[in-house]
Image 1 (cartoon, rainbow, N blue to C red):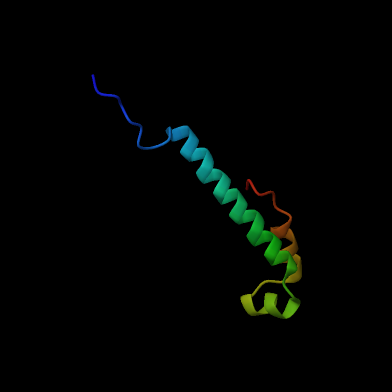
Image 2: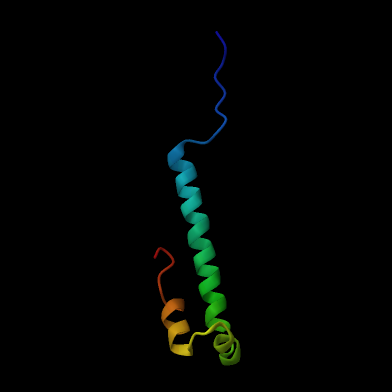
Length: 61
C-alpha cells in the first residue's frame, strides 16, 4: 500500500501562519508610521493625531 505524502500543511496551521504574517506587517507598518516626521505625514495627507491613533491600534485589528 502506498504511503500518503502531505503536500500542504493542515488548513488551520496555514491560516494561523497567514494571520501571524498579517499581524506582523500591521505592527511594523504602524511602528513606522509612528516614527514619521510631520512633513512626511503631511505628504501622505494625515495629521500627527491621525497617525498616533493608527499607531496605537492593536495589531490584531
